[in-house]
Length: 332
Image (cartoon, rainbow, N blue to C red; front, side):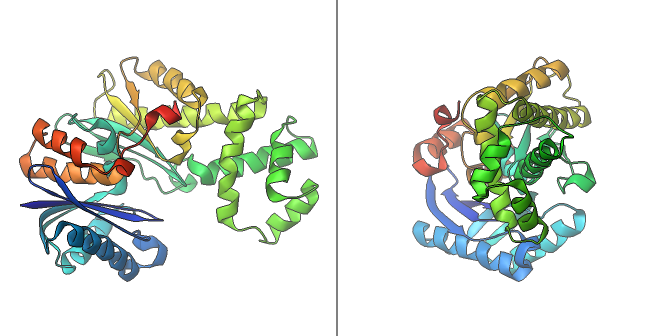
């Protein structure tokens, strides 16, 4: 028997194949696997490509069960459409569709059957699995849907505070100097024109986020305020999921996944701990042990066996490729 895990996001797709004992046999990768970016056909092509690479490495042609953790799997209509599309690939006998945030959650809680994950990458989301296996998730669709966080919102907040400092409505900040240097501009009026006329690509603006943490560690008050806002939103998101899953008083693990939480140094994590423990002192913050694709594979095993099997974990631990493990020491 062969099991498969797929993690498909807005920028890349990863696939892992293992035998029923947990020995990883193949890995594959592809491009954008989120149908919302370039359409369903394009997403399926990239997912299929990642599966083909993994199958070729494993020397197999088909898997028995596969858990596909897909960005864009948000509403029931999405799940129906994506399940049909994945089944049409004819690569897996039993198809399980999950939102991609669940892969990040499982990559952090691993042995545990329940827990919560807050994801902050380009955007933000929060998801949880309760003690009885029930799931809860925020919309994760942006500001209009109640969300705040991720490099999209954070970069806008940085520019917002810089321009308020310029026109006198806000406190002066060393972010101004860093932002001008980043965009290679001598003054904010010139930068404002480039932004107004769409001369700066959005992907470039998203890269402002590391400057925030650099300035916060330098003691810049505005930067520290924004970092505290990130921490508060992270804790609130986790708390919202706790309430929906009746985990308010449980020693639940809260996984922090995504590029925002990969910032070096303890400042952001320390702020998050303080905020989170004001809601639930028993909650434990953890960072992902693996890349999300390993979480997707673990979910496939959970669905197959109905519970976590220690021997399977040991096999995955010993056979996972090194670049699928996350070096947490570099981040703390």
